[in-house]
Length: 173
Length: 100
Image 1 (spheres, rainbow over the protein chains, first blue to last red):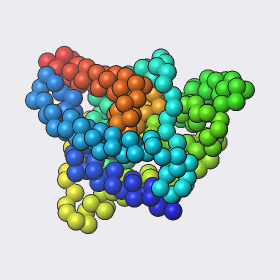
Image 2 (cartoon, rainbow over the protein chains, first blue to last red):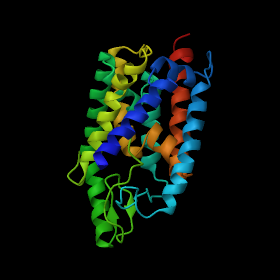
Image 3 (tube, chains in turn brown, green):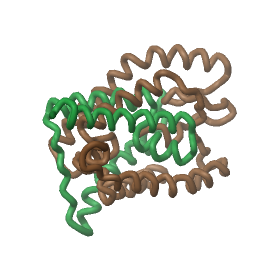
Image 4 (cartoon, rainbow over the protein chains, first blue to last red):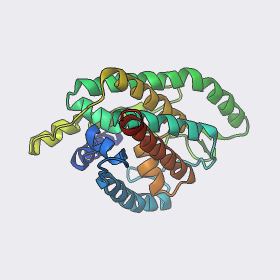
């Protein structure tokens, strides 16, 4: 059942990305091109998504379980570390170079674009680079946290150990 | 991806939904064209940066930009401002400063 709702969520998300134009790199780059013929429309897409998301997360924050009865898990990390800044910086440069971010790239791959496939393969390679270089640091940190009775989600975010370990929906792609 | 992922099923289902979205959309109307101007070398470099960056930052345009900002998460606000700024500067450099 959880897989079915996730599939539907992916479908709705993907169709939204198509309708809004987010899957079109030319449109994304037009939005990022402040000095050229700036196309501000994607800012409205973001504003609309945040407005809907704000209501959804406000409701979610008041609940301890999801509608399917599984424990509600929301990201708990609040620390601003260099990894967050460096990672966001690298991501932003890649986004500006190609006009693709992870979700739209997967949708474009589903639409059959060979260039999207190349981008996604490179993106997965980049994620594996993180697994090799970042995991050792994560393991050390996770070990330290586990010793203090905390649970660590795959994204390295800490949640109180009273909550069952079930990685939350946010913080991914 | 990592052994610590206990429930990859719903994650795989979500990815499948994204991949199937164009087919679902095409049932109702013609799929709009996607213009990918970047060449293959650029796509590979950009893909690597997006892959590494989103993992290090634990989020992207969706994870931080939409979901995190919706929750008013300070981490996500900082991340979103950072990658937006990086995107603006990158496009400026590629299209205007280096290509004039």
